[in-house]
Amino acid sequence: MSVRTGVAGLPGSVRPRLVAAIGLGVLCAALTACGNGEPEGRGTSAAVASTIAATPPSSGPPSPGATADPTPSISDTPTTEAADTVTDTPDEEPLAEGDGAASALWGEKYSGTADISVRVYDYCNADGSRRLADSQTYSANSTLDLGRPRTGGDETEDNPFSLLFAAGDPAQAGAVSFWSSAVSTTSGQDLAGNPRDPHLLLTYWDVDWSGGELDARLTDPHTREAVALNLINWSSPVVACRSDLGSLPGGYPHALATGTTFRGPLDASTASLTAEGTSTDGLVEFRIEFEGTAS
Image (cartoon, rainbow, N blue to C red; front, side, top):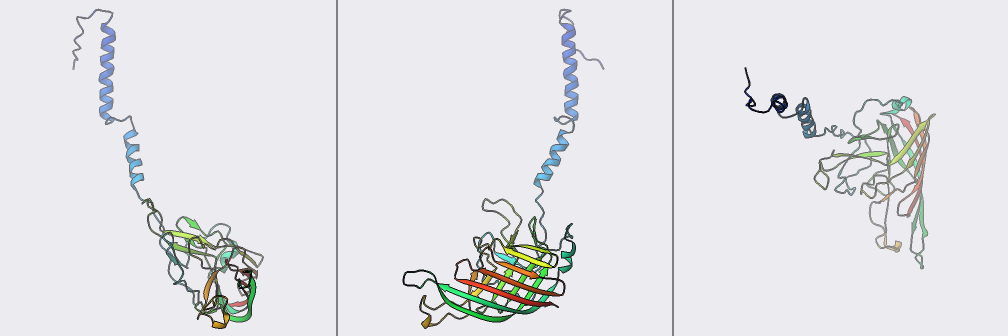
């Protein structure tokens, strides 16, 4: 096929350059048509990028709801918009590298007795200063459950195992509960409407276990999220500073303060652990000596 350029009447010096320019324009048009207006490969890359951007992030399945019995009740625990449902069983995750012997304790359940000593304070001095108001020593049936580190969202508890300790009836005064972590269910969107994973991991304790010795420390009570699960229940007077008027029935939950410890020998057969700490309001100090046997 011949192409008529219409340049026959042009001066000889101009004609070759104009012919070359027209030929280049025809070539560019052909290439553009083949690429649908995009440089080679660019249209495909843009389509893939668009597909990836439009694909919503995947989230793991919610944690199973099975719990050991007995465990502290959390049905009355206040929550916030950021954290409104707590599950106590970790998701099934592959064994992480380095878990080693600690993974052998996953699933162990210990039962026994805890001897608990409590010192209670108030601010009922005439000058409003803190004073010792009461002290008691008592025993309570107790359990200790160890499990796989919990996972929520895209985070996993950074402990060798999850830990749940319960002493006494959670509805009664004198009961104590320790949770190393919990998974809270939140809204699938943040306040700006952006999508997010609805599972939020809350870690309370820094747990170390080596050479058959447990060394755990409470590092965040999560009171700012209103999901304080590490608690000691204690009775409160009907009227402040009037103990002669009696106490309210049951117990009032006091969140445990940062720095509370839980330590001692722990293996697949027995647990001999001591806990010491205070409440965040400074009104309750306690010491717990737990002796348990794996069941």
